Each structure stands twice: as structure tokens, then as C-alpha cells.
Length: 298
Ligand code: 13P
Ligand code: SF4
Image (cartoon, rainbow, N blue to C red; front, side):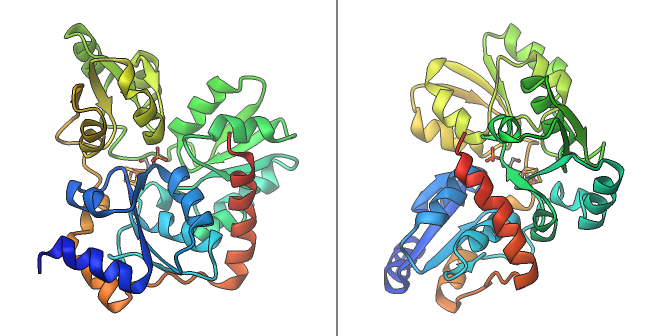
């Protein structure tokens, strides 16, 4: 049997739902039940009826699904698909920062470990970051681990003081884009959209700043785009808007997102690997931070 057919059959037998992030390889996107951004995957995980969720993405996405659906079996097909950005921030750093800034709220990007979420007040994604920060009564916000997203939200919400935690947290895929590249793309007639994980100089030169879900929503507005985010976002956009042109950078590859293959997905379904477990003392406070974000839905 062809591997895709086998995946579909096993998925039915196991009553599993396959969730894939927009950066997954095309063949994984094609076989998934839902492809989306971090927020869309989290929301879907929270309401899914299937008892088994297979998250094709990186570990923090599978952990977020598990936090929201503790009674479900949540699987990630490759155990070491991580997010180097998430590793910039530890719970100890958050606890130290709280001591230095008593009275500040702690907002952490979902691209963080469950242990970091457990010591935060609330999480956010790039799709709802401004709404999350605006929703808080505190004027000072400790924000981690992405310093570029912190600078983005500072511009969106100028009446608050955003302190990046750590000051240098970043994603290597997104910080590789340059303002010069964008100027070139604009000169050639493209509209430019960038993810808020890009550097401030890139954000300032772009026509639009959006989460990957935001890119999906806005892509119909122009004929030709230069898309400053992970390369396989281009596959997702082209599939949705075949008559538009999307340029991406061939070097913008998230190595961890590319670890999951169809073979891994098939094995995950067959053998029930790798199950995500979060220790209860971390899961309870971390869930509170994620649920508080879901309740905002900005
Ligand atoms: P989105 O929430 O926009 O999908 O971004 C997730 C991510 O990891 C970006 O690098
Ligand atoms: Fe993490 Fe960057 Fe990969 Fe997104 S693209 S998962 S932030 S390493």
C-alpha cells in the first residue's frame, strides 16, 4: 500500500488527528487534517474530539497540545524536533527577572519550554501578542524568549514597557533576512511580508508583519510576494493561492521542522510514539498560562 494511504487508514483505525505546522515539509502538509500556525494548532488541540493527536511540528507545539488536552494521547513523530529559540530562556532566568522587576507581568512566547510556561503569567503567539499584552493590567512586561517579537509588541503597544528576556533571544531562521534583501524585492515589484521574529530593520522595511496564519489570510491581497519566513511557508501559500507568486529564501530552513518524514509519521501512528508527558507540577501552572491566552483569542 502507498504510504499516504496507509497513514490515512491507520489514522482512521486509531481515531487520530494529524496537526501540522505551516513549516512542515510539503508531503506532511498534504497528509495532515489541519495545517496552521501555532495558535491555530493550539486552539484545534483544545477542541478536538479525537483521543489521539499527532503533532507534526516542534516539541513546544506538541507540549502545548498536551497541556490543553491532558486526557488525550499526544504524539510527536520525532522526539528531538526542538526549537532553538525556546532554548534561550530557562525558568531560573524568569524567576531572577521577576525579583528585579517586582510588579511586572511575565509573558512568554509559546516557543518556550513547558517549564518556562509554568513560571509565566500568560503565553502568546505571534498572532495574538499585541492583544495578550494589552489585556494585562501591568505596565511593565517581561517578555521572552524572542527579542525581535518583544520589539514588535513594544511598537504595537507603546504605552507599556516591554523588557526582553533575554535581550538577545532570537530564531536563526528569521534573523538571517536583511533589510537590503527586502529593498531588492521591493524594487522588483514584490510586496514584502515578514514574520515578527525578523530583525527590527527588516520589520520596518516590510509592507506587512504577520504570523504564519496572518500570511495565509493576507496572501490574496497582492499578486507577487517576497515572504520572509521559513521556506515551506511558500508551499502552503501557493497551494492556497495558485495564481499568486511567492518568493521565499532557499536558505530559510528550520532544521527541526524538517526532521519529520512520512515514514516517521507512519511509525508514530503504528507504534504510538513518541508520547508527550509533562510532569504534573509543571503541567498545572503551564496549562493555566496557555488557557489564559486561549481565553483572549485576540
Ligand atoms: P507562527 O505562530 O506564526 O506559526 O510561528 C511559529 C514559529 O515557530 C515561527 O518561527
Ligand atoms: Fe523555532 Fe525558528 Fe524553527 Fe520557528 S523557525 S520553530 S522559532 S527555530
